[in-house]
Length: 218
Length: 218
DNA sequence: GTTTAAGTGGACTCACGAGTCCAGTTTCCG
DNA sequence: CGGAAACTGGACTCGTGAGTCCACTTAAAC
Image 1 (cartoon, rainbow over the protein chains, first blue to last red):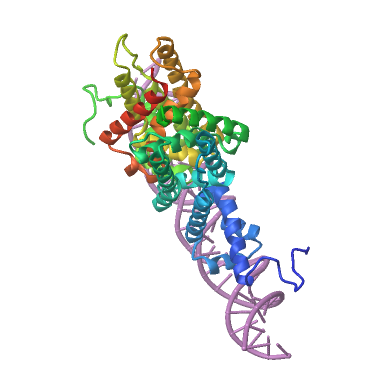
Image 2: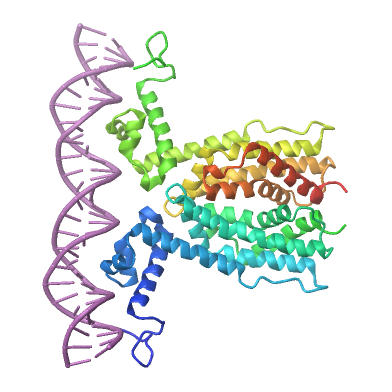
């Protein structure tokens, strides 16, 4: 029923039948788990959405719990990779303010995405049941982001562009100044609470102003 | 079995039998719902913990859902009241830095409490199912706190103690600078991730430094 | 002290969902 | 082509938990 196949009659995406089904299950599971949470999710519905029999789900994954853990881990890693793929550098002699604004916007754009917001909500909601997931999200999310920022600020500080005595503290300030208002808002108000791109841009500019007022060269 | 009664043979806390049982159910429900979430909670267990029959639970509350909504609303309001009860004012000629540090610490101490953290986790986890709860928590939490801060900064700004052009923006910066690092950490790392009082004090001092560097009189 | 409402416990219904089983089909690989 | 392995669907088991019912006890009100 319907294209999506290559000339040799095989569906376009790579891998054998088993691998393809496995991917379909992971993707369907992500949709359902992110929407309904761990307890609220229904394995039959996941199987249906993946266009796979329930049996196949249980051949690939030991249990609902194992499937959930696998999916959440993958989403966490995917999110982290997206945030940390090709981070820009300030060109020598470049515009510091503009650079920091772009850095902030980039981070906001990636993190404030329905899928990542839902992931965060689900993980937070399950911290009691699956503490490892919270820990993993913390470490590959804010912790890693702040480490990258601290390294960046160290370069900027040693280049004489900023006046910072504790790079980790400055990174934490910058990170949370930028992320937390929209993040917390979206967390509690649902995906409709994710600010529009224009609002995010303004917000980033305000935060960079504030940051430079505190850490910029006088 | 065991004391807790006054001389006249009645349990110490006020109200008739019905009112007492109702309070017991609300308290037990809070414990269980905060620990297990909405779906994970078990009405039989709540009844048992409240030392009440299941029937009584259903006489007082229409359904598990109604009980949950009632409990979460109460906890949300209680939290909001705790944060907004007797907010200090800066005495004329007083120490601004010390005042802001105290303000920050006070806010941190109240919000970073296991019960309020659990409430936040549960509400966030249920945003998909009960969006009203997220909205209510947002409004009586961060929104209200930021409004109070904006009013305070307006007084301080007009008194010439701070240089601020947008009080709401400054309030948002101060609020999230102070709250977000520990809050997000505790959110993902569980109650064990709540920083010790000493660490909070240091954190508050760092944030106030940063804030004053940006908004203080030059 | 009698009435009346509230509370008790424990049995019960009923829906739902995780996980299993099986008989029959499809797909892949040699 | 032929056989092994994977997949299917749909029926089935079984535990769990929300909500109800009932015969009986307790306690509050007048």
